[in-house]
Image 1 (cartoon, helix red, strand yellow):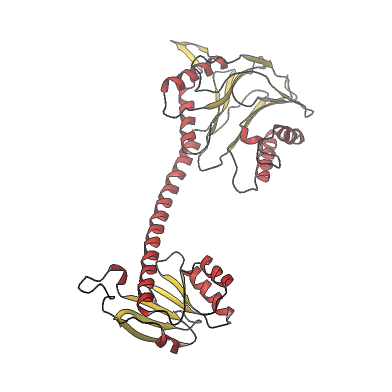
Image 2 (image 1 turned 120 degrees about the vertical axis):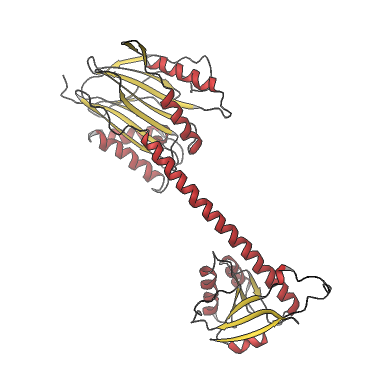
Length: 407
């Protein structure tokens, strides 16, 4: 590698007596070429100190080089030099150095490819020296500004990522660490968020020695605002009325009504629309009582794979102050499964929209699996339908599985 010091200078004409503009501060330029003598013929302004030009071969990157700009020489009909320029641009894409090429006779297609690859400008031998110096300094300044903005953006993204990871851990801490044991059956649950945090939420909790409550809630949308609403639901849902040493279980329809009143009276700036289904299972009698608030209907799955959507009406939570939620009851026979799910589970078809029929078929096909395997089969189907990378919506599944041999 050889070095050549070149000029720096008097202000451009018309600027006499003024301070040198910041854009025209002395630059360090690395000229990458297999024709080192060409450096002496680069266009130069009258100012002998406008830049220091260092020359490097295409096969050797000088150790410790930290140029303001890199100019890659592209001889006529040399595709390897174009590839070299693209490689340099890729290497320096996130840094402050501007990458340019010096070439004549490039086709439009070649120029477009270079620009798309990160090259900022195509210089032509014989350009006016003063104009070239000003243009080069301007490009370098723009790249420095963009590079500084990218560094700030990456730092902001890193901090935001840390905060979202923490929010995810905190939200998961609100989920039950262990599902309650019940006589003659068991619970299973799955939650997979579309983003760091979910707008879906579930809980399964023992109410007393014979009753277990469980629900799935879905705040409209997903991400942080929806996730905060799930915390509101967990803290606001009333399940018992306690009077001294006595208590009364609040039925699901009444619990949803009280929760709806809390949401409406909170007068949050943005309407907190939430769908929810809440149920109570009585181990002693097998009775399952539940109520819906704009949520997908619970599914009753039989031992032979039959599926019955369970009826029950009720509006979304947080909209109407005088909302009514229908009381529903069903005695569950051994070998049955009750499934609560969020609407993200319906995205199992080939299209992007929800498809409840495809979900039912997936459940029917997996109905002979253990309940955990059936829920995993639904999640796998959703991942497959969305390409396996990012889910289009949060997916939550909670199932009550009763043993076929239960008395």
